[in-house]
Length: 275
Image (cartoon, rainbow, N blue to C red):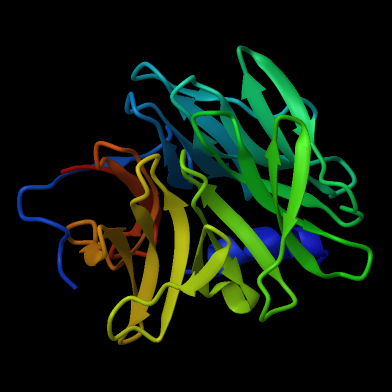
């Protein structure tokens, strides 16, 4: 398995009470898919994600109530990871040689993204309303680095205590969330790193951040994985009713949360939660 595949594997490896009694959860399945993840949501409630057919991931968008495939042209594997208020979509894909790249889809035009020094692959995982994107890349030594791309300028961001860093989301104020070695979650604000730890959990991961700074992700407790939201310093669990485990991937400023849950048979479904 190459290092680019390892970046994607980090997401798959990161498999309590319901967030709120009044919350409205909707299960989401792409027609004919074996599994579905809803990963990004913007201010208008438009969503993006990925679905799997015959073991291959495909990117999708739902902009008007209709789910559509938006694979990067010529790719063998695609995932849509974020969408901003302008409708710009960020994601990642593998080419025919198995090398990973990021992409941005804006006004119908695809742009491939490869961070400088990304000898062994790039992933793009988040986008804010100004079009700033974030993600990670693997250099020639096999080390993973986080990066942001703003107005054509790349900035490499490495956690000071680890050899591997991945950035998964950026807010409109520039606050960043990501994962260090092993994908332990962190928050980066005004140049300061701080660990994210759901109370009582042995392992917490960050998956996304809203334009207003609310953070979502997942944590493990008693052998199960649960989604969470961290808003104004307070953690709350986000679990699909009746599901066995969950991950919260994205949140918008209105508190709409998207993610993935496992049913009793182990199948993966997407979800949208309205508070």
